[in-house]
Length: 410
Image 1 (spheres, helix red, strand yellow):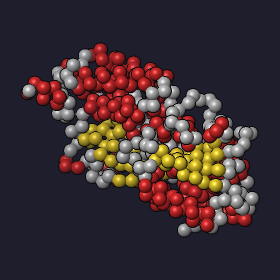
Image 2 (image 1 turned 45 degrees about the horizontal axis):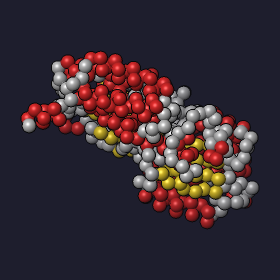
Image 3 (image 1 turned 90 degrees about the vertical axis):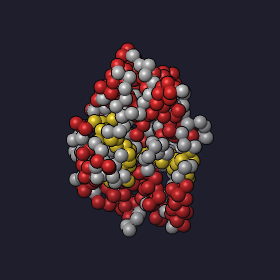
Image 4 (image 1 turned 45 degrees about the vertical axis):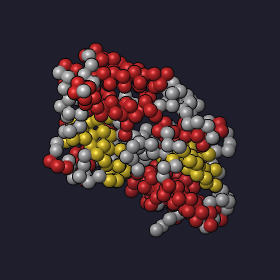
């Protein structure tokens, strides 16, 4: 319904600079996690003198339990293609790649069909809508590495190399795919572009907050009555998401925490249920928007074990390129193993916190820079549980010390 009318409007009535101004006025920020202003990123690619230029879409979505981008690709692939075409018109790119993990077979099948449909209708290729615009689109498949969600790791994988990040600068807007200017965008970001063009920046910015406009999709999972994919206005509170939309905690259990931002997110306790869900507010309390995952934890969850679990996940997913992430995260995991097996010492907490801050400040890419978030937030908001594990050798949730107890039984 109304598909590609925004593209037609751009080609007939708007200049590339006019489109960038409209996106800047809308306040749209990248939905991939960092929240960088979309119009500003497009302008950087336009200003780059080197050619050819490329567009790369991040559909890797490696966070466990997160499927917002996958759902867009499966349900409305032409919204993504139209957003890419508008970006191509603005930036001058003539080739685009959608980087998608192989674990998304239905999304791959749907996108391939949509690309074929667009080509059949002369919406991809040359002389698009009887204009000089030309743009071709190809799928690139990832092997499911979590680190491939980082923009420079995506570029390496698209080029046929191992998905490993590289130092920045230069940034992809100036030197990206094959050292050419490259626009890298999240699926949800691009799907918003036709809506903004069709309905105006003022319409889009009416929803959300002044600094974070529009809506955001979240995958709501964990100990929640109504799990699923939700779309909410920016600035909605965590309480509204958990209790009004999610229906609260099942089986009469108490809410304990919500992990926001996936394995690299922060664990927020009950007294922060009123925090607005937007980039700036979440950063202040130690969490991140990430790719849109919210995992709800109840009173049966151990926060020490939760931090251990996500540290272990990041250890497994680290590419190993930089020393802080490669060596620091396993060292942190060793400390968690000590604490959860009844061998922890109070000095371990100082080592954990110092390690977290060092890894966060000196890692090469976003995986290492955000991996300490679950640890830092649990130390900040649930330190009593760490002390209980160390001083009393007890786990209130009854999750830890199982291996120790089994050994004593034997």
